[in-house]
Length: 195
Image 1 (cartoon, rainbow, N blue to C red):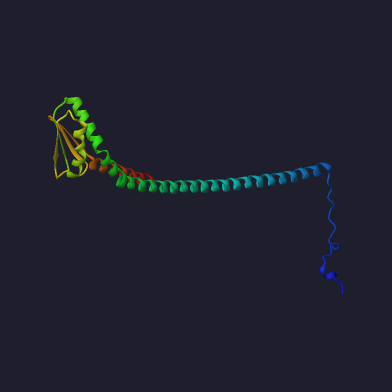
Image 2: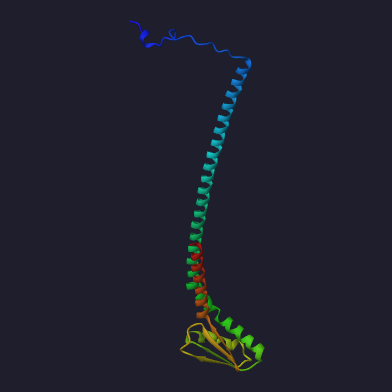
């Protein structure tokens, strides 16, 4: 069995006019084909560059967002730790420190008043907790008449020092409260700024 019926027969086509190609027209065809190929290659290159630029820009934007997010996470973690640390300091360390600094603070107030007003009798009023500690001041200042008075209404750390007509009040609980408020205000403001 023959397969001729499956194949095209080009011999049966009518013979057309022969095409004559000159060297000039052949060269023009080659240049045109080269230009088309060059332009297609150039267009592909530009398209590839644009796509690469878009991909790089998208990657850069994502990386910057990741860095910003990471910075915010680290900042929040550090600020949270600092807030807890400072709260512990104000709740445990500062009250003990203020109690230990009571005598030096009162001594400093006394020295300031004595420099301004000369040697006069001194009256120190304090709560029952602080009066025993402050009694040693009279031993440190033997040439000054110092009267110690107990006032039940004064809290620990509250001392009133009078020298003649001048009076100064030391209020360590108020100082500690203001420190706590300043720390709390700082962290509240920081949270508003970050948010």
